[in-house]
Image 1: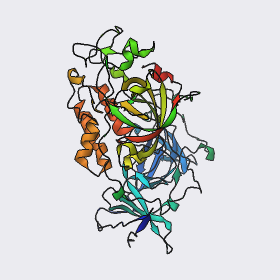
Image 2: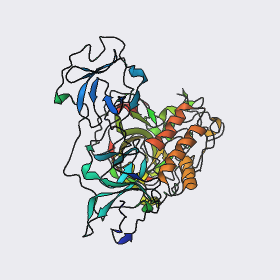
Image 3: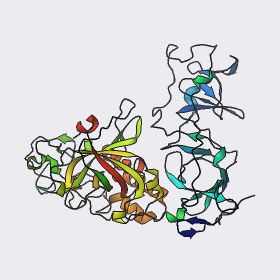
Image 4: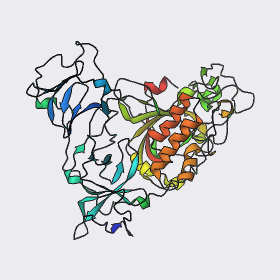
Length: 499
């Protein structure tokens, strides 16, 4: 029998949650239609009603994560823990692959009709980290929240009912776990299990489950309804950042770990917010009179060819050929999903800021300075860090504001992108995301989909620019004007190489 949602007190305001969706489309948390949860990309093998999960090293578990055997992937055999054969003649290249859910901090994970990641602050995402809604807990007789409740979608209706987080496993955050497909071994020397007789021990469990008694469901004072997640305003702060002589997401590989970021002694710090732009103009820091000997790259040929003639004018000045290098799109590093890297503009009043770096740590809210309402997309960004290097300044950029260079982010004051062969760049301030928010209204998860579609369409003939645009949709969760704390840091090599 379904439980009705009760009225919760949120701070000083009472907000009522009413599910009017009936039985259709509502999933019970105890549904048998489940997908196994994995912590690395794995094979799924089904033998009748029994499912086996095989990790890249051949360790075989059941759907509950218990080790039940080992697999010889090369020869297509699954062995039980007693060395008997569970199945043979398997073509692993034809099996379905399971991918781990994206988890940004300790969270409960529920598998019902799909995978739901439930965070202690109440936010809920799907397996790709896209916001779905919030978790609302049933109150007890005293009005205090219990551990049982409903997942409520962006429209205020229940998606999944009767979720008891006390019965769910708690998973550690992952950092782009095993980003490559699982291998199919081509020779016996590469096979992790060259023959029968596997040796199993509890220490070889590839899917450890972490529990924490300190993880509690949110209190009634912090529970939030989807109705509080009104749409973000489109970018209200003007954020083109070229002055003249005015001035994704892309993965760059790596060694599987994040660069060490060191705080700069005596450097600046504070709070602020991030906007976005890409005007194609020659950066402020590519003018010798501005850079102080620390010149940023400039390019010609649609941003593809490095140009060391620093006297070249900007494409935004009329007759100039120098412009922003497309290589300065934002990017991530494999194995480092909660940290990303980008280039940015800072206030013109900052003066000699060329080549300085800052760490922006997002707090999960929309910027109060721009009256941006906080949505589930902002919450999904909480705790992520963006390391930026300054290449530009803007007379319209405020203190604490970092204007991130993102293709499709809006051209701002100047527009030098007419020669790029791209599609419509969207709103002058806010770009494609601003257009999506205007079209989609109060459904943050659909804004992400809208933005991805626009990135794929507008930059269909430019794969690099498309990667930069998709960075906003994917890594930044299409969060408009997210608030952050910033601190000046030593510039990591991954940025200096592109500067």
